[in-house]
Image (cartoon, rainbow, N blue to C red):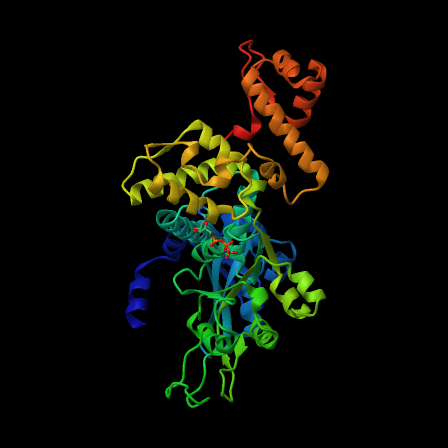
Length: 484
Ligand SMILES: Nc1ncnc2c1ncn2[C@@H]1O[C@H](COP(=O)(O)OP(=O)(O)OP(=O)(O)O)[C@@H](O)[C@H]1O
């Protein structure tokens, strides 16, 4: 203090004023009642009023005029101690302002000195930083998702680019993020298990186990202990140390309950409890355990019918059906047949060290086939013909009998659109006949003559079925069914 006084004595008061005015930070001095005594140039600048108009004014009045928002001097007067606040001054920007009490010789408040620093840029930088880190977080999440997709694409490729299948894949991606119970329905072999695994791979649970339980493959007597485990000594023959169930093994991951329609009625209530509370009790246990799992169920049965017949609990059905995902049969998305054929041909050629290729006639035949066993049937068939074909080019004669004879006997007619109404089936047959005749006779005039109908009736049918005829004059045409 003494040293300070010594040094200050060397300066005239006007030198202190020069020093304060040279500062970029604002200095604002008022008396203990808030009346402005003096302010430096920086403070004058940010108040937007000349010093002459401010000196003598009370900070409360200036605050009412909106010059400070809030006035730190007033805050110091109210609290009686050093106070810091963020002040919006004259809407010019953000300032970090600290007000100090300077006491007189007897220790009573004498002056209030506020010091303000412009933090507009710092505040902007900080909010930019927040935005950037939010953006980084989003990018990192997206990269994670892409990585998961890439990993999954590396190991197994999802084939299908029909409109129906693309919409389905979209739903699968949404289901992966939603982390809720999902019920996948569809005919046998359409790829329900395959898609359940895709959901798991794309979800945040991908690092944890995906446990596939086929409810129809495990005998009813064992299913409960397989699912929920048992405590030691639960029953005669039980392992002494007890057994961990599949539910616990799927902790943090996904439990896929395939063929859920075969889950015995008495286990359905246990599953309901698991779905509702995420808790379960092992056989012979007295306390419940929790499992952090996501359940995906699948069935090719009509669960609602089973509910009506009293074979499936309706409350369980509604609990499972939170996110219904229906996988269309292959015959309902014919555009996926060629990509699946080619994908499997490549796969099985590599596996069996062959160089098979489909003849055009075989592709045509396979395209028109109804595929009652869906993708699984297609896969099995391709592997079989890759192994058994005589030449590199796969011919009609290499196909199994039902496919070889297709179109040559009335059995084929009987199998066309087996799931459709009579009218729809007749239309399918008509479409096949016209497409075939157009291919054979090339022009609509010759085709109409061959079919014994007028050219205008043929044109009406072509329009009805959307068969694209090439009007370039060469008589060729595009069959919509043959487009990939
Ligand atoms: N989009 C697809 N791309 C490539 N392969 C697929 C696709 N969908 C299904 N598959 C293959 O088809 C076969 C049958 O699929 P999956 O076992 O998932 O059918 P599912 O509907 O669960 O059959 P089920 O009802 O009999 O249990 C599997 O080998 C699977 O890899």
